[in-house]
Figure 1 (cartoon, rainbow, N blue to C red):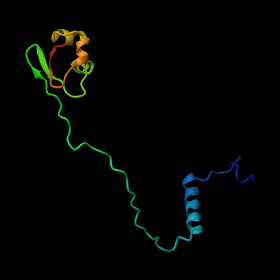
Figure 2 (figure 1 turned 45 degrees about the vertical axis):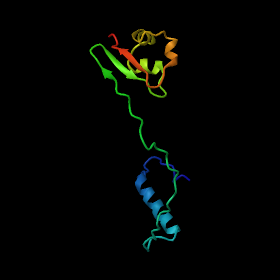
Figure 3 (figure 1 turned 180 degrees about the vertical axis):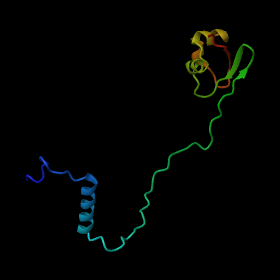
Length: 120
């Protein structure tokens, strides 16, 4: 085993050479080397399709005025999500629409809300 451990005066075998020799031995052991390998057609694996919506829900387009925006409530909207989208507080949203914050919990689809400009 002393031949496997490099000692004084020994030389190292480059790794790529070891890999080449190993690959050649593997190829010979598998019966290859002299003939062209057979190429097989890859097997097609069925995958489950990912559901994609057939029509995308339109993004609400706010109507802008000099100091405010009119936003139309859509299905799934919440007062908090609307306030976050326009970078305002729930109190600002309620005040701009003459409502209390509690009344913001009862938004209706199609309801128009005044969105004040956020203060810097």
